[in-house]
Structure formats: C-alpha cells, structure tokens
Length: 238
Image (cartoon, rainbow, N blue to C red; front, side):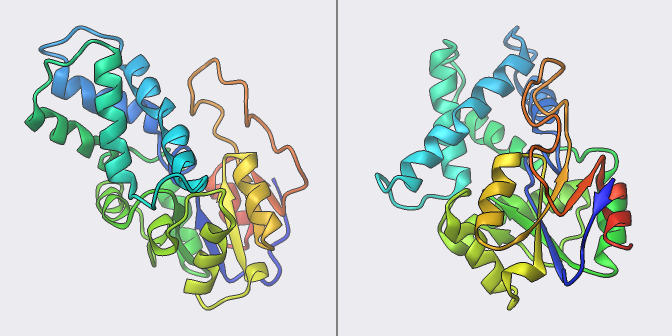
C-alpha cells in the first residue's frame, strides 16, 4: 500500500468492476431467471453482454448518437446478445426483468467496510457510467453508503470523456486536486489524472475471471495504490 492524500476532500469511484463484481453477479442473476428454461454457460453470457458496453457508449462519445442512459444501452445490448446467441424466444417481460440484474450486483467483500471508513472523513460517491436510477437501486441492494450519485447522467458524458470527470468535480463544488478518482482500471485513472484529479488504484485481478491479463497492477505512479478498500481507507488516513 502506498499513498499521498494531502488536500483530498472527496473520493469518487468507478463502480462496475471496482466496487461490484459484475461478472459473477450478472451470471448468477441471469441463471436464476433463465436457467430453468435454457441450458447455457451464464458466465459466458455475462461477458458477452458486458462486451457490448464500450462499443455502445463509443457511439455517444464519438458524437454519432445523443446521450442515452446506460439502462437503455444495457437493454439494447441485451437484445443484441440474445439474438447472437439464438435466444430470441425470450419474451418481452423476461427481457425487462433481465435488464434489472445490473441493479443487483454484489460488492467485493472489502467494499462496504472500506466505504464506511472513508465516509467518516471524505465525501464519497460513484463517478460511474451508470445512470442515477441504476446507481440508486444498486446502492440499496449492495449497501453502498454514498453521499451523492455522480458521473454520467449528471454530465451527459461517458468516461473517459473529460466532461464526465469535470462535471463530477464541479457538482461537488471542489477543485480537481481535491477529488480522488478510485478505480481498478488504469485507463480510467489516466483520463481522470489528465483533468487534474488525484488517483487511487485498487486491483481487482478477477474482474474478468481467472484468466484476466489487464489491470493486474498499477501501471503508473498513482497517488494511492492499495490491495483493497480497507487499504485505501488506511492510505487516506481513515
């Protein structure tokens, strides 16, 4: 664990992968909904659905589409994956139910305790590509003690668009150097650092499963590097 938190007043967090285990959670939830009707590798399904995440947001980042909330993109991506996997028999009511699984993702074991420690001394909230309704329901499900919901929907921008970070900082009434972006993804931190935010890296080496090859270690001299959220809290003096 290493860290320098001087002057930091708020910590904002990437959510999918950093705070919650999307891969295992989506597979679990989808199996509960479809498993009695369809025999499939639900981890593979979760990864295929998530595989549409960046391409769908890139249409918006590139200006080819107006800002559209992630709930809508997730539903479009679900329809795409069901078609690709020849599961078109899944009816509309079930598709609506399936799209809600992103609101029921389990946090990594260290997250809630770490966030509660941080909350005593810092403003905490998501700087996520998730829309407000998604983040609120996820916080209720996973017991995430946020002070505010920040990120994509309040900025009309998807990370790593600079406006996603600038707008989050502005909403808090702070300066960029007073806000630490915390993520398990080096690219997210690089984009935040380019806008003047402080940076905290917490490794999630199994986000993509046992064969993960990216983001296993900090790839830059981030302000804080920790193994988990408890270590992050300690590095921030909590």
